[in-house]
Structures are given as C-alpha cells and as structure tokens.
Length: 458
Ligand code: IMP
Image (cartoon, rainbow, N blue to C red):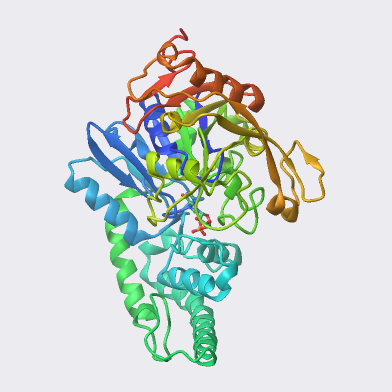
C-alpha cells in the first residue's frame, strides 16, 4: 500500500500520532498535509515522552523522510523550537523537509485569533489561539507569507508590509471596541490580557523587527526547505510507502465538520491530495483513527457528551487534557452515527480503535446508533443541518462492559470476550474492519487484528 492516509475519525485527539509512529516503521516518507501547531501528539518511546505539534511522528526513525507539506500552516518559531528540543535529545533531524509553499503563521495571526475569540464572547469557537484561522484566511486572500519568502529579505519585507497594514487596523478597532464595552460595564481601564492591543504601536507588530526575526528563521530553516510534493512523487513512483498524516479530524473539517465549530483546514483524506501535492489515485488506503469512546475540545455540538461520573471516568482514566492547550476534553459515548459518516466521507479502508483500556470498569457500555431530533424525527445518518445536530438526542444500544485491565493484552485472544464483542459491534455498524486496537499509552500496547502490516496476515 504505497499511499496510505491516516485521518482522525472523530473530533481530534484520537491518538493518530501513535498509529502513524507504528505504521511509519514500514514507510519511507511521512508527510503532514494540513493544520498547524493547533495539533499535538505525544509519543512514548522506551519510556521517553515526545510531544510534537508540527513535526511528523516519523521523525524518531533516522531513515525516514519527514515532510511538512504545502497544506500546513507553520509557525516558524514553534517549528525551530521543536527542532532544537529534538536535537538536544539526540534525535537526528536531517531528514526533516519543509515545503517551500507552506504558509507561515505570523505574529499578527496569533493576535487576531485571540482578539476574534474575545470578540465572539459566549459564541466563541474555543480555538487553540495559535493563529490557524487568520493564517488560512490570508492564504485565501492571497496575502499569505510562504516558507520560501523567508529566503529573500526584500520580498519578505514587501509581503509583510502588505499583510500587516489591514491587521493593524483590525486589531486597533477590536481593541477600541473592547475597551468601550469594558467602560460601559464599569470595569477599570488598564492593561488587558494576552493579545490585547493598546493605542501605542504594538512592538509585536513592528515591520522591521518582524522582518529581521523572520530572516533569521529563514537562515535556520534553509537546510530543511524542499519541494516536498516532488519527494512524495519520487517515493510513490518507486513503489515505496508514503504515509499522509492528517491532523485534527473529520468532524472538525472546514467543509464537512460541525461548522462553524471546526478548524480552518480540511483534515479529511481527500485533502491529502491538495495538501501534499499528489493525485487521488496515489492513495491506496485510508485508515481512520477513533477512540473507543468520544472526546471533543472547544465548543460545538457533541451529541453523546456525558456530564456524569462515566464522563469523569473517561476524563481521568484517559488523561483527557489537550496536548496543545492543556484544556479538559469533553467526553462521551462512542457515536456510530458520526463514525459511519466519517467512514464514508473518507472512504476508509480500515479503522484503528484507540484507548480501549480506558473503558474497563464501565458497565454497561453504550454506543449511539441513531439520533432523534427535537421534533421526534429519526436520523440514521449524520444530519447536515446545524440546528438538528445541536438538538439531536442520541439513541443507544447497550453492550456488556469488562472489568479486566487490558494493558497487557497483545493479541485478540488476550482481550476479554466483552471487549471483542464491543469491537465487533463497532466494525459491523461502521462497515469497515478494525485493524489495530490501542490498550495503553506505550508503543507496544496494541493489538493487531488480522496480522501486522508488512507481515503476512495471520
Ligand atoms: P483552531 O484549529 O485553533 O482554529 O480551533 C478550531 C477548533 O478546532 C477548536 O474547537 C479547537 O479546539 C479544535 N482543534 C484544533 N486542533 C485540534 C486538535 O489537534 N485536536 C482537537 N481539537 C482541535
């Protein structure tokens, strides 16, 4: 399977990093195709924990090319920070390649993201405030700065100047409006929180300083800058395996997710073509990653959300705190209406189910199989209309739970019968086989169903 795409099947944080890390063993190239440092994944290797936000998980293998594709938005300071940490821990980053066409998250994007969220108040999306939305907006407006621009100071300065002017104005207006609201509310004027802009010119928005800083980022990134699409073609044409690593997930997709509570890129499999520069027929397989239950960070509809002790169990046992922002994740039952939608939208060929161990001790287990709208209409399919989804009440099937700790299971036969029945039920209703099951955070805490890739199926 030369071209394999890995996507999140729910609302993100499904544990894609570990799956990519395992599958990377048989791959030659791992490429990220969308998102930015709003993503975060933790990989535990020989007791050492690695946290990445931008760098593809395959970087821990010295012989793999790890590419950041053109569809990614990249904060150069953050990327260089990750490179430095890896170098200090003895990881060779020579094979890290960064697309010259990837867009840069600039300081004003981060400020605008925060200011936009503050302005929305109760209606805020709960973004990671990493500047993702404003950066993709500039890309679409053709005001974006790309990685290649870092290598030419004159072009860089001209482009920053053009992009900066409307941002300064927008930020000033937002700040004035915010202070007026605070005054009306009788609050003391004074220094506002992170991201606030006062009347005085903000040093973070100084053209000269920003240009200088980015020129120096360019010097440091230069050895990594490459034509990453070409790297993918070479590998694919030679029959070598390329893994396309999605960030975020299907239900956060800008077009197909729970808009407007979504991210600003397309995390679905089809976007691997655009974000890495390959054709649809380069994709041989699509693997979706779903947790054995469901989580969501940030605002937006989440039909199977639990606000009881079962949700608390999932939060605590599953350590459901964001890698990027540290926020508590909302937890809930496995939602098969949403999963079926994700399976079809991505045309998945396989599923991996992570964190099955977290469910031990919960009895019975519930899975949502359909929704009912507030008017009583039944939805077997994921509803496209926002207001239906917001008020959808899930209907559940109950399955027997299991008590045993799954951490030591390494084969299907080691799993308790109730756990196997739970997996069979999911695979049946989702309509795709489950190939891999996670039973703990360590790299080896997995159960392959039907044999490991690269080995003959058992
Ligand atoms: P943004 O991507 O920072 O603009 O945030 C938009 C929405 O996507 C918010 O609800 C975030 O919590 C969510 N989001 C962004 N990245 C991730 C991720 O990697 N995991 C889970 N949720 C994410």
